[in-house]
Length: 248
Image: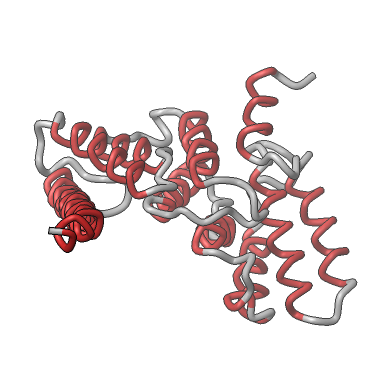
């Protein structure tokens, strides 16, 4: 019997395709890629496979993927020329890079791949491989994987935790992106050690500097918008008042 928490993960993380096991995903992919002769259709099958895998659990049959199965994802992405296909957005490529990583050796490998996944998802706004799932849902799913590994197998530094929260933030508009950056700055600023490491690279100091640089762009965009609005307002008023001046 499935636990309620697992059901919630499936509904949020992979809304269109729910995997029973990694083996089941592999069986479906093997059949899907054999049917079409053209590469675009094979790439569609690969994107579907990656979506299916996202719904799997660590101890499901075939999970983590065998080394050979992970390698196939990489080699067939290249051999099918999937980099030119619309389904493989920068977000979908993050999914591909996660699943092509050899994680068979254990929790440490899964942890490292998950951290790299979070780092890859940061700042992305395109949809996932299924064409509908948001980055926020993917990042939340990865966060869940990390949590289930436990602190002993996958310790998360305070700096990395800030990055995870940022990856889970909605940045679908410029305003929301700036809000997320402000929250990231607040989170990083609360960390006392400037050398505290991030999920993959960087420290509290370097990530805070990068965040401040991006926030400066937000401020500049706000000023530009305000000035543009002011100029438009002045021009409109000049236009509206012109008849009165001529009448005099």
